[in-house]
Length: 152
Image (cartoon, rainbow, N blue to C red):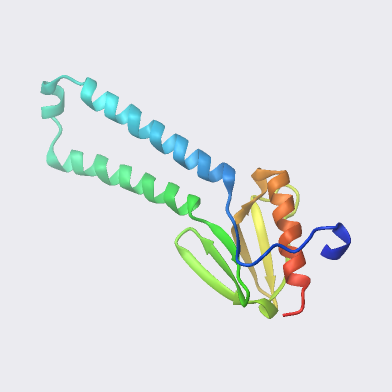
């Protein structure tokens, strides 16, 4: 069904879609993990903390930084519609497509995120529109379909 028949008005450009649930979860659980680790570390007696070698402390710090990097990558995902192109940021990868390159967008029931179909026959995930966001994701899909269907 064409997007125009769904009654969705085009959004003004530039417009950005970001996943709400993922950003909230990454922030909440990241802060919770940091708080629990800090309380645990400072809850140890000084004699217990002294038994950790420099290598062990470095390993704990590296694991914490890796967890932060993963959460940050998920939280920074976005889809941005611009007047001349569509920008897709998935984690730390950034891709930009001219409007004629994007043929369709779909979010199958139960899928984790939207998928863009490209003119060359390939498809690209668009993690900025998360299926777990429910009605918010469906609205984003309708808005993006309207933009894709417009002549550019």
